Length: 277
Ligand code: PAF
Image 1 (cartoon, protein in one colour):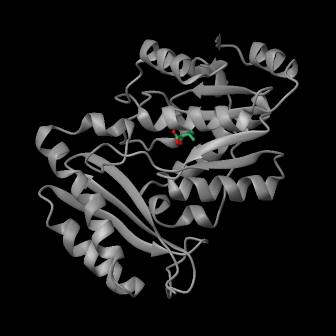
Image 2 (cartoon, protein in one colour; image 1 turned 90 degrees about the horizontal axis):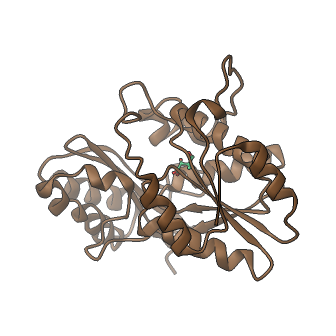
């Protein structure tokens, strides 16, 4: 497995590739969820393709009072996970390299980014789109894998690819869960023992509410159930359509999304709301 810190060396290596180049952008602190992204990338790459994992804690997607400094950076562990999951190359640029002095150009999606997590984390998706666009330009992948856990991010990246015409196929990867149902996330490491014990109740609440009929009833039920979780503070719970607008009925595919603080940790999760027959 190659490890690149220099964008120029990554670019030269990439230009020598003849098959598919499948990108897995991450911020490191890799867990089972990332392993699944890399394994899916390997299947997409096929016998002649390569998988490139990027590890970069992207400062522009963190708000001023968020956890940029505290975000875990266990590089040795991350490289071992990449190697074991079958990555061909890792790109791990130093912080300054992606944002040179005087950096003043951003990529901003202005519709899907304005709702849900975009409301409570202003500027977050602008930071995500900017770094992902830069990584696409650098690594020139044919495919890029994104987890469904970050449902809004996945839809925004799809919109960016469509709007700017990036020649990249976006490959969604289903959410990986711990045995008790909690969605795998680097931020789970912030939970104390009590919070960790209560955290799976978020997923259970979504599943229980999703058994009901109308989107409004589902959101009400999920809200009531999550309010009962000790230490939980709801950021948002919403049933949305493919454009992240409130889901009006169950004739179309929908998604039930939740963002919930447990103590200081902000957890997100989502499940499908398939159309009713
Ligand atoms: O999903 C993430 O880990 C990040 O938002 C991403 C896509 C790697 C951009 O920094």
